[in-house]
Image (cartoon, rainbow, N blue to C red; front, side, top):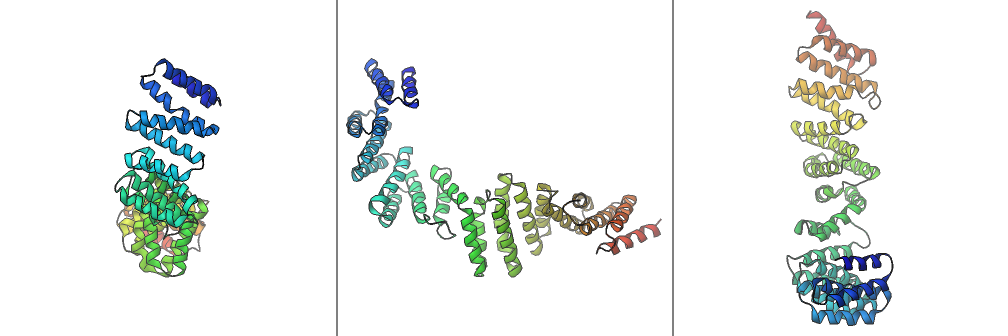
Amino acid sequence: MARLAAAECHTQSGDPHGAIAQYERVIAQRPDSCESRTAGLRPAPILSHQGRTQEAVALCERLLEQALDQEQKAWAQQELARARLCQGEGRKALVYYDQLIAADPQSPQAERAVTVIADLARDCVGDDVTSAWLRALGHAYPGTHVEAMAGYEQARLETAQGLSVGNAQGYLAVTRSFPGTPAAALAASALEQGAAEIIADMAALQAQHRWQAMAGALLDFAPYFGRLDEGALHHLHDMLLSALTSSPRLAQPLRPGLTLLAEALSARDDQSGLALISALAGDVASRFGDTAGACAAWERAAEASPASKTGAEAALRLGAARLSRHEPDKAVAAYRIARSAVVSLSPEQRAAAMVGLGEALVVLGRTEEAAYEFTAALALAPESEAAPRAAQALAQLRASR
């Protein structure tokens, strides 16, 4: 293995001649060893890279005849196809790639062959013929990595001019049908990178009042929106909020997609985005009458970004919901978050938090603390909507003493 390592060092240092010489020494010294068989395979790509394609072809053809196992045969076929490509003999290269795929449709070499052939076919015969070939390839090897990669290449071909809700379905099909495969990982990456384009297409659906199609798109693609930048995420939020305002019946169909989107943002540790989407999910659940679901979403928003306006407003709504559910201790915790948001909330909002906090404390029998909160609310925002509640609560506390 030391001799092979020495040859690799020559290759990495830009000395192909030294590498080939070292491989030849390995073969000469131990002709029947595994090390020798490995060394016999390595010079082919070096020769192709040097432009010595005829030598590479001759070497690969000899290795193909002498291959002792399928792995060696696959390597020889792959390098022979590469050498033929370097010679400009694309159709001959296709023959070897087809043989490589047929030998083991589950192998990494077969997957790579699909990608190489797809690129080659685009150049040689055009998109329509390539598309038909990819479909035929998938049908010929059902349930294999070759079918998965053919599906990915088909989707890549269909989305060459940009992603949309419609043409991105091919990538979705690969992620769902072949989870855990390299093709699925590539498809998921393509969806993440094209997320902003998909959202733009969703906005077009919204403009056409195709609410159900937009909600369906959110459900399909939300898991791939976790890497959205702040601007794109706010655009998505505002679009969904506008759609809800125009069509309140969207509350129910949007809920599953919002849940998936929140999970994707959480997985990426995007706390600001998580707060934004969770707050909206809470509002949607509240409209649907699911107070428990609303509380869970608002709590997630408040915990993700308590100092932000989004998180603090979610905490304010959470406190009111907890109090209405007869959970005064949890209401106290939520209202304290909103009360502390000195920078992000207005004095009127913070006064509302103080009054809500005071009301929760009264339920818990902590009247002195409650009186302090009511007094602070009146001092902070005497003209706020919450001020009359604070004054009335103070009067009731004084009368009960």
